Length: 534
Image (tube, rainbow, N blue to C red; front, side):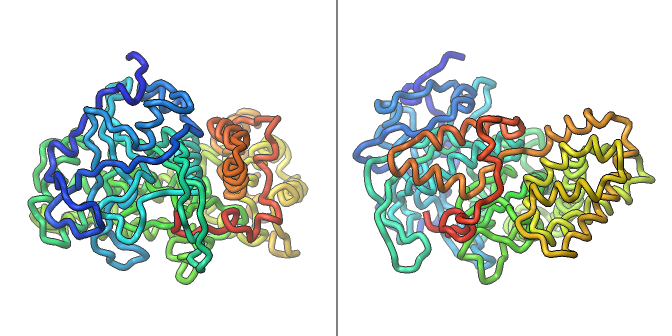
């Protein structure tokens, strides 16, 4: 497949062509009943110029890397709409922090259409920060460099970690200033504007179906469900009540796999509203996310969530189930008996438990030893989170360090206490005497369990290093890249981006990017906490 500039590639528009939408209407915020989307053009910006580009994703999509300025960047900023594009903003609703919010929709994201990748698959390209839509409510439809850079980096970092995710193709500065109040505390200030081009097979969310069900738009509900089945779940067969049930089960299964991967790498989404849940089981909407540093199941990076901690790290499996229940309620009118959807919720729970256990065994370098040993292995893996919480263990560093210690633990289990001291020195933020006892006991059990493996210590270490990343997108690293980019220095962004493409490699020249969170970042805005503000 030849490489093409994005301003010359032919776009396809199945969502617009096959679903009922609003062809034209006032641009201002308003209710848009009866439609799946609104046609709306991006609002041009004064000086679009390229800041970052995903080479791997571009190659997969058959797209050439643009020059810093020019027609391709104009298209990625929303200044150029080509003849084959049919830009639109999707209409959806959702539960926000557990409360029904009514119509939400793409308030600052405008989809350009789909392009064909080199394998023939279709991928939607969506510009986030491209200007107002009918769904912007009280906002301006823009995004700042701060949030756009974070979304660009994390989308690609998660992909390279093996986590199901949407992708990011480009980061473009707009040349304008966007006023934001980062923590909603009355200190609004202008910040550099940016647009990130997000990429996914589809950006359809749980909330698309919820809004139609809530408004009694059953024809639209069925049309959207049938569209989703035809384009994204064709293996399930032609739409029918029985197929809708199987489809919900598959959505539940994919959601469980996604959340299990989040938990295995210490990722906290931060705002798991139903409108931020992908119908494809992909991580979507990178806003106030974060990565566990001191292991704490009650930690959330989102200041808006500090009161309830609804979306804290340890709550994510439960919230995903709650969101699936909301989706099942929305899909109920499509099936003969809504109770037929209940097994999908059971499948979610079973898949989550099985996937989390399998991922944890991989991280520990262990292989299943048969049904008789399964209960003991589950007890071992399920005891680890509590053991990590006491001494404030950095989850990423702990597993990476444990990978290197595995040969010594296998060769000499009696050295477990000595090796724990090394682990604590490398990975703990604070150790109160006695609080490491659970971890000490756990490590002794783990050392004994390693002795049941047939592989050599070096083989175990190799497979653990392939399962435990050395580099994740810690908030303080992203914040340093943001501050440098705002000052015109893209070197930290480029370096961080390159390292995160191979997070399981050593990168000796960039050891600093694998370090524990420094003390200065503990309470610094953007390094420790964020908000839902862009």
